[in-house]
Length: 175
Image (cartoon, rainbow, N blue to C red; front, side, top):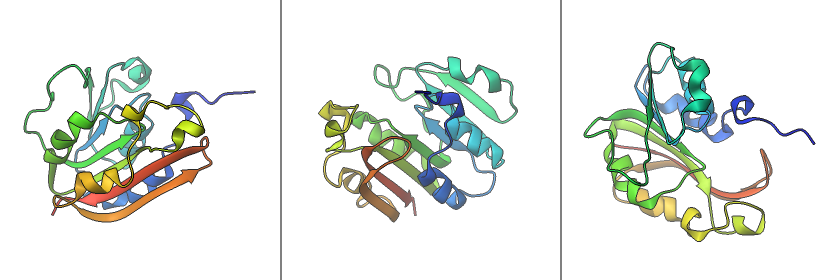
């Protein structure tokens, strides 16, 4: 069976659907960017991008692109690396480290868009991750945003592609 490499994985359909809400040419943060599928997508939409991950080796083919700032950083063992920098959009997929949530929400500019999609309870029956530390509890993404952001869209469902998984996903605006 042929496995698709992370470099060739398409952007999340959720990210594609809601990226249009990020202001034109606004700076986007791709948090825990992995191989950069969303970094590449947002650069293609003419957004400057800050891409952060503990391992940036899969970004070497785009490291010299104008309007791309790559930061190799362990988000789970260090303080928030971006200070008071604000972003027009923040994208987080397939990643959850709850202590970062206040910093993520605090880094959204006025009218900034949060696009977040990650695994939820129930995923442990389908595959990895199985550890509850990496699985959102019922409506947890809504709880993170409640009172701080206006929710544009939210889903808690089982998806079939790119692989079967239970996910929560949200698009919310800071206004």
